[in-house]
Length: 130
Image 1 (cartoon, rainbow, N blue to C red):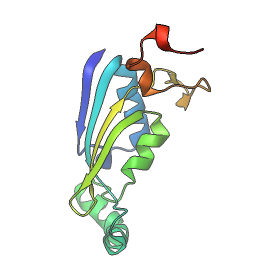
Image 2 (image 1 turned 90 degrees about the horizontal axis):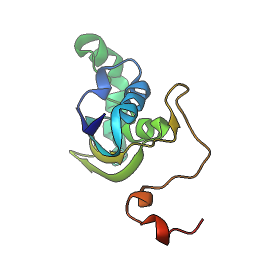
Image 3 (image 1 turned 135 degrees about the vertical axis):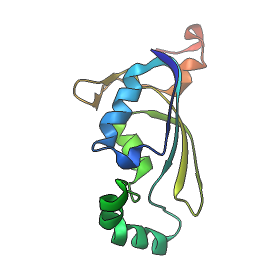
Image 4 (image 1 turned 60 degrees about the horizontal axis):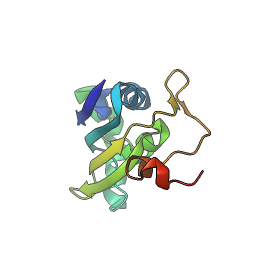
């Protein structure tokens, strides 16, 4: 297990980005951090999203990169616990700080129905109400 898992501009070029994120969850220590610096679609500028979508197939064929992937959606689907999220460069660059969700069943890729919160790292057990 690792204290920190980092991925920079890699989710655009893998066949199954959710599977990659789920693997990051698996290899990161329960109190570890997952840092993502990725590029993808923007929610800020529709004209730019339309341009990325219109040319995504050709761009992928030439460069092996899907530059219009919905990074926040993929992270949410993976079950990671997002602590911080920022966008830069017209909203196409995504900075995400996440924690692993150790209730995630890595075999099936689904999240346990048991509620889980990042606050569990910061609140001593004797202060928690059960």
